[in-house]
Image (cartoon, rainbow, N blue to C red):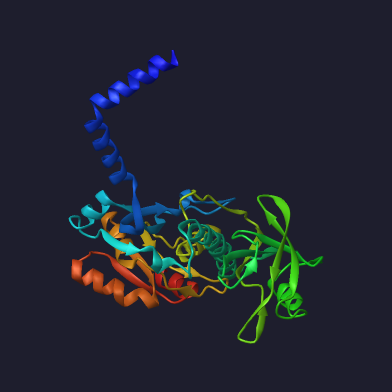
Length: 333
């Protein structure tokens, strides 16, 4: 029976080999991608659908995330980028730290997403004068340098060093200071909800003993009212911070900043409410205009670029420069 099936397949291939060759070539053309992305204008995401808050005030308008649409650089997409306006080829090297692969970049950006979200909560509650609690801190590995001699992985949460519990970044720094270059330390880390034992051989940089990894401090916060973020698997990065802080502030305070307007924007934020620069302004602004947003909020470092794009394309949208959360709130009022 199997021999009969094999002979049938063999005969079919001999008869239709040209078709199969063409099929393989077409498949390769559509599946092979290069070390680039194709960036184009994105759309808007109403933050009311991304942030859940207990007992929040209503909004007559909306705060909206702006984002960049990124496509893999397959041959068809590369060809389309030469035809479709605002489709640009961007090297993945522009997002790399040293020799990161695409998965490591994505994992690091997801950590940034969590970090900026927690900071947005702190900034909003502080501005509103409402108390919050930092229940615990997680020290998470967000990048591993080439010089590192370690089996740590991106996303590991450091729990202890040589048996000493680590609860915050200061404790980690103080513990590492006890050792010297080339000392091998044992680290217990949380990985995939399990405690794993890892190691690291300490190295020295700028006369300072280091593990050889980049660390992020993620805050676990409790608030009243409770704030919960709803992330999608394909969402990452820190550029949503400012808009998340505005959305949270608006829903925990009585005054409605939106005043019926569709407000869009971008920008990172720290726990003190300071707004940081981002990338992809032209794509985010174009997406906001396409979706008929009334306002586009942009970090001060990116303001000139946004104004240039507005004037070049005759965009009908108000642009607000953002230095910090308090200043943006006052301008919206």
